[in-house]
Image: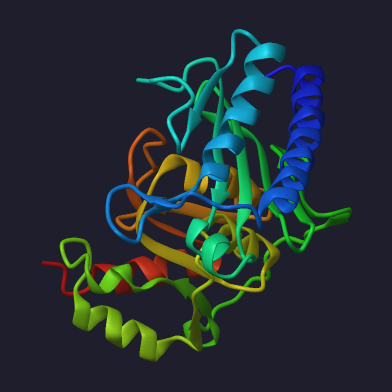
Length: 268
C-alpha cells in the first residue's frame, strides 16, 4: 500500500474511532434494546448496530472502492481480501458493555490484499488507544510499545483464556488444558478479544488463547502484536484465514512453540 494513502487512512480511522467512542459514551445509558444472535450469551445492542453503520457510512462516502467486513453485517459480502478491506467490530465485548459499562473496545483493522496495514483498538471507557501501522511500531496512546521481552520459562507466563476451551473439546483435550493451566503462572479473562490482543502487544499478558474468533475480533490485534514481535496463528500453528472463524493463539514469540505443544497434547 502507498505510504501516503496508508497515513491518510490511519488518520481518518483514528478520527472516526474517537468520534464513535464519544457517541457510545453519550448514548450508553440510553435504552439499549438488547437482542441475542447465535445464543443467549451472544448479545447485540442497538448501539452496536448504529456504531457499525457510522463506520460504514464514513468509509463508503470517503473511499468508494474500499470494502467493509463488520460483525453486524452492514458491510460487504466478501469472498476474498483483495483490495482494501476495513474489518470492524463496533463494540468488542458487548456483554461487558451491557453488564459492566466498561472493558469493551472499538476494533478497526485495515487490510490491503490480505496484509494487515493498520490496527486500532480503542478502550472506550478508559480512553486508551492502541494503534499501529505495519513496519512502524505499535503505540499505546502516544507511547511506543517496546518489543516483547525474550522469555524462556513457561511457568512465568500469564495467558488470557476464556471458558470456551472447556466446551470445545474437538479442538483441545480437556486434561491437557488443565495441566497447561497448572504449568503456567496464571490466567486472565477480560471478555474482549480485542483488548486481550492489545494487552498481549503491551506485554502485560504473554499470550491469549480462544477457541472460536471471527475476523473482526482479531484483525486489528494481529497488526499490533506483529509490530512488537509477537506471533498469531491458529492452534495448530497455521496461518489464519481472515474470512473464517478460527481457534487462535496470539503470544510472545518465545512461547509460541511451547504453547502449541501443550495445546496439541492428547488431541482427540
